[in-house]
Image 1: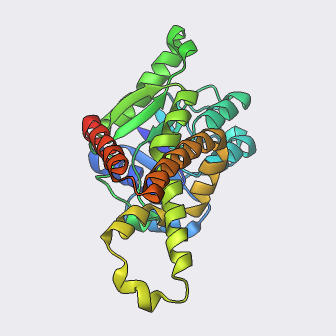
Image 2: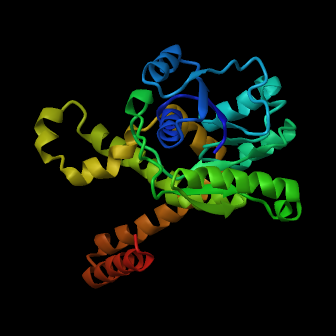
Length: 290
C-alpha cells in the first residue's frame, strides 16, 4: 500500500475510498481536497482523512504516493488544465471517472504522463461524505485503462499494474480495457440504464403531476426500484451523457428499436410474438448470469 494518498473530491466516492483505505491500511496518510469546505471538515472530524491537500502546490512527492481524482468527468479535465503544478512530482495518478477516453486524452495533452485511468464499477444514488460506504468496493469490478501501446512500454506497464494492485487491495476485481472500449461498453451497461431511469421517472411523474395524492398508492416497488438511480448526481450524469454522447446515442437508438418491436406486438395483439420476444429476453438474461 502507498504511504501517502491524496484524494481530490470528498463526496460519496472520494470519502468511501478514503475511509476504506483508512480502515484497511491505517498507517497510510490520507489527505483530501474538496471545493465544498464542509466536506473537508466532515472527513477530518470523522477521521476519514488526516489532512488537507493544497492544490496550488505539488500534490505528491516521493515514489510511494498516489493521487486519486474523485470529481465529475468534466471537472477532472478542467482540473488537469487549471492545476498543472499539482501533478509535477506525482509518481502515479488515477481517477474514478465513468467516461475514460476524454479524460485519458486530456491527461496526455497536458503532459500528465503518470496518469492511469480507472473506473470502479460501483456507486450510489446518495451523495456526500456523510453517506460514505466503507464496504462499497468489496467484490466489485474496477476497469483499469490499458492501451495496446502500453503493452510494449515497461514503464507504463508498471504504472498500470501498480494502479490495478491498489484497487485489488480494496478487494476489487480488476479488468483491463482500452479507453474507447470502456466507453462503448459502459454506454450500454451503465449509462443507458441511468438515462432510461431518468426518462421513466420523468414520463411517470410528469403524467401524475399535481395528482400525487391520487396516484401515490399506485406507485409500487417496480417503479421505485427502476428509478432509484434517477436520484443520482445531476452534475455527474450531465457530464457523462455529454462526454460519451456518441456511444450513448447509439445505445439509445438500439433501445428505441427494441421498444418499437414490443410496441408492435402490443398494437397488433400478437400474443404469440410478444410471449416469444419476452421469453427470448428472459433467456438471454439468465444465460448471462445477471
